[in-house]
Image 1: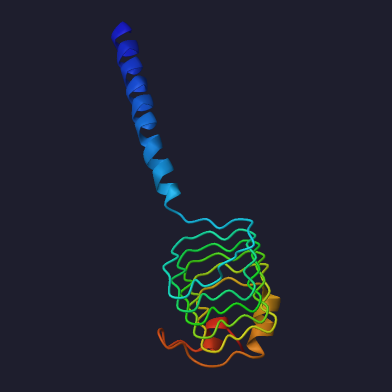
Image 2 (image 1 turned 90 degrees about the vertical axis):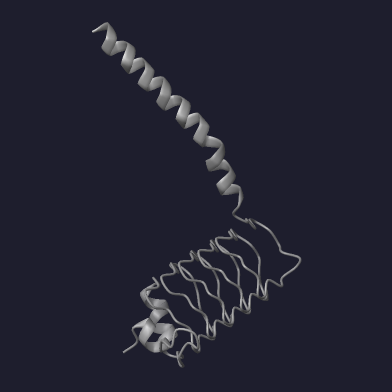
Amino acid sequence: MRVLRHLLGICVGLILTLQCLALPAIAASSAAIRAFDDIEVAVKDYSGQSLIRAEFGDAKLTGANFSGADLRGAVFNGASLKQANLHGVNFSDGIAYITDFAEADLSDAILTSAMLLKSSFRGANVEGADFTDAVLDRAQVIALCKTATGKNSVTGVDTRDSLGCP
């Protein structure tokens, strides 16, 4: 019984030591994500940049230029992207919850598997955008289907098909 307790004590000590050694690695990996939270952005030209997994929480990005940017896995929670240029962006696996895309240019954008719930696309240009497996509110899909046209130049997917338009 004493041997068993001793072995159990060694195992618990070893586990705690390994967990403490792993903590700095976790903290360092999360620091690699660029965050732009709660800001009125002064420079609004992100065109062509690699912004993979960048976070834009509550950012005021009205009129910002993201054309051709790599936004795979990026997060725009509560952001304002009114009249933003998102032409040709790759927003695959991205998240835009409660985000305003009113009058934004999403032409030729790749939004595959993006989570776009509670977001508004009023007046947005989605010509050639690929929404394959993206999650949108039904009301937004219906509204987008009224103006959706074209095929994405990279994926070759028809915009109306990717939205599931009738």
